[in-house]
Image (cartoon, rainbow, N blue to C red; front, side, top):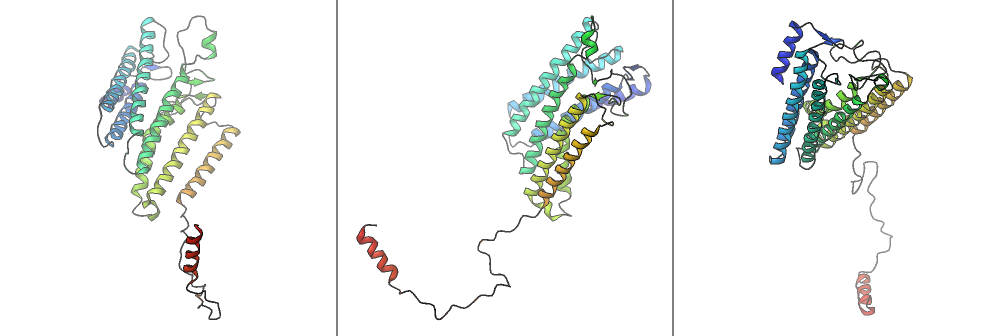
Length: 327
């Protein structure tokens, strides 16, 4: 994938063809970079297990093989000057698009098996373990959200002969004005945004933890494993809320950079909840008050000499009485 990213970058320079409003080599480049990061992250996560397993190796090989097949289709269609996604114009285009759908399902199943294996094994301290597990869970949700793009748009449903099934954009046709680098639509909703947020939580949560651990030398509170775990949980909650918010925004046909009042209020609530969670995670827990020594403001009083002293034989007599009565 790294080599393919280099080849695709060269294609962006030497090949000036444009397809659906974007340079024809832009999609192979983005997917190659994304698959490279995905593969490296899964490999690192599997290496955290104490003992490799056959199931883990097979799951990893499944992800690799399905990714290679999908990239072969995407790159081949770019060379042909044809759309790889949603294209059913010819029998060959339709067969290739169906093949991509199968490979995505296989890749998701392989990732699910890796997640199951990693949920059953310790992966370091609790903060690292849950950063990996929650990152995988969000990535699986992000992959599933890609299925929303397969729903035919209203104009496609009304057409008698379909050459395209599904779309990235909601409320506007694909190929319109787009953001730089990402290619996300700037005039309508774009389902690639929640897909991106979910999938890259796989890298975001472990990287967030690495950042916390790098600061432990300067901030003593971060040396506490419980504090790091709480911060990871807050970060995972932020990612999950952002995933839900961007999905809701895209399905309403709203561009990412043109939020309405409802979206802004929801974002404000998410930010406030995240800030409150961070404060709680970093707050120092009160010390236990059990068996504490007297405070300086609490003088130790001597025993009162006038207080009655119980006779020494009281406990003995009580014991004898209990024995005699059978109690």
